[in-house]
Length: 416
Image (cartoon, helix red, strand yellow):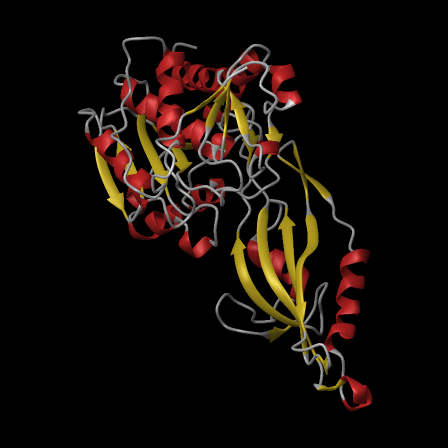
């Protein structure tokens, strides 16, 4: 079967400005959604290169007379002012992780060998979009753009947020910057983050922190190793503590969150004939929303270790890594699911009717935590499989966009 490439001519600079985004509402919803997905998939928007796509999204939203549009950096916020008693925020990030062999994107026709077996089995006879960002999360962005263009009389006031730098360190996150500079732009009674969930609801999220556990030694020539102390050998105790740690599964508001504590990087040594005087084990701790960020840090390094982002190395006074040096690299809080909130209950009921899916816990970290800090209950609901996010063969079946759009359109207008 043929494979259709949707990208512009080969050899074009993928970071250049893209054509204006359009949404033709004279045809079917499915056709409009597919067109929007093509247009934003064609834009190379790896973190740090979101500006061309943000420019196009801003221009598209400003063309809609029922929306008021603001921009901070490469984050674009558009909102209605209909005087409704409640407001819903719909948020999606524009950036992607780095491309591998999956840019430019392609529509794959049924039978194409590049279609994954699981996708083909779940969506027989459908076209499939393959490319970086297909599930994480340009499919959901396309749905939000469609809703922004077509929902002129919803039962709630709506705010659409398209933000940058979600896939990198927290300090660069565009949503975080808007929350700090313009928290009023994000005000609402409920928020939906379009992270891929197979169009189900995933409530809350695990928190995450990344830090280096540091061991120190004394440098020496390896021919006279007794003159030094080997910092890499000392790291064996760090690895032993990681191996002996038993992660828990914790139930919060009826959803099960599985924690994790893992080494993800290790570095040390300055030469092949030098006893290393320092070794760093980079650790990632994913913690359930039954604990705050300070409580999670206490479990890892003690309550008074003093390790904070940007303040260098401190000795752990307790916890799993007591006695070792700790240098914080990144941290983000968890978020409770809030599944008993009335708006969540009604949305979950509709999702169950349309997809048969019960709410699940979000095990990865998402920006629902940022809305939680602002006092806005939030859930994850998006098109595409979370298991395909960041994979080289990232892809999504065409009908998933219509499923997501149908759920949100009917819920936001009160038709369901």
